[in-house]
Amino acid sequence: MVNQQRKPRGAGKLPSSLRCRFAEGENAIPDPVLLAQAFAASALTAAIVVWLLAWPWNAPHRWRSTLGYLLGMASAMAVACRLLMVRPHWPPRVDQDRFLFVLLPSLFCVEMTAAFHMRPLLIWSLRLLLAGGVAPILLYGSVYVSDSAGPGTRRWTPYQAVLVFFMLGLALSTVWRLLSKLQRQTQSQVVPLAVALSCLGAAATVALSGYASIAGVGVALAAAVTGCALAARISRNSPDLDTAVSLSVVGLFALVVVGRYFGNLDLGHAVALLFAPLLSWLPEWSPLNRFGSTGRGVSRLVLTTVPIAVVLALAYQQFVRDSTRFAPTSSSEPSLQDYLDFGK
Image (cartoon, rainbow, N blue to C red; front, side):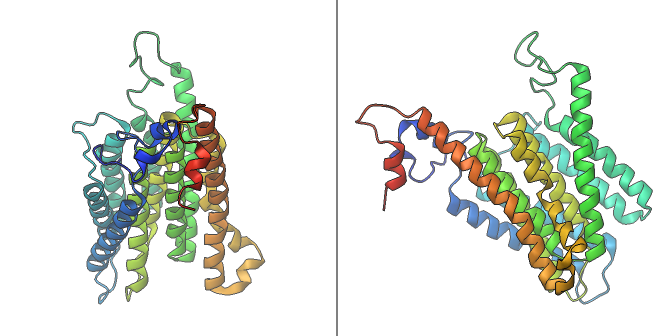
């Protein structure tokens, strides 16, 4: 989700085989400097909102900290959209509009209900119901479930659609439940940071896989969760980060689904990105448990980073191969190697 009028840096210097991947328009790869600025501003916004509503000088209240996380998340997303000049459509027309205007408000309602009703059965019934609806919301009106491209163009039969949505909902609910349990067990800021790393990795991988406009969403999600973790760290009475984990897990799942079905994200890469945060459990079951809270925290981040780095490297190699395959043969046109060697 980037400004359709912004021209990425260096786009005019690319060979034509790469220029189509960096060109202006819906799938233009965002300027890394702009993304970094949006990340910093969004994280700071979320941290301030969460810190103020958590009232660090008083005993923390679950409803107040939950409201802080939700408002911090909304504020961070708004700041990121503003800086990246994102203009979502109302009524929602595409998957990113449905993510912002349908999915996130539904998630906010579920989490606020969970803050006032502490019965685990009710909380997880609502979360599982939402987990089952995330994929149908994102894929609504697409060629997978409707004849949007003309009569007879629907790719899935009703039976196939139900099966795919069930498997996707099961995957999301499994990751969500396990990470929420880990967060409640450890009461650490590292668990949401591990999911934030996965959001950044998913955004970069999906961008390299042909759907660059989703990068802004991944940056906003990661920034919001990072800001929440920072606020919890500096608060005198650290509020529970379970809500931040829920927001980031659902956001990560949305990134993977959009990249898989609207981009060219490989299935193996999608699975690795979605389940990478679960490696944060390993320090609880291994000899790393003897290293203390700091050692376990570092181990969680390292273990999460490894599969993300591998997926990013493979996605970049595929991006280079695809660019080379369609490179022009004319000597008057700069080659891919010329571009890679530029500035050395």
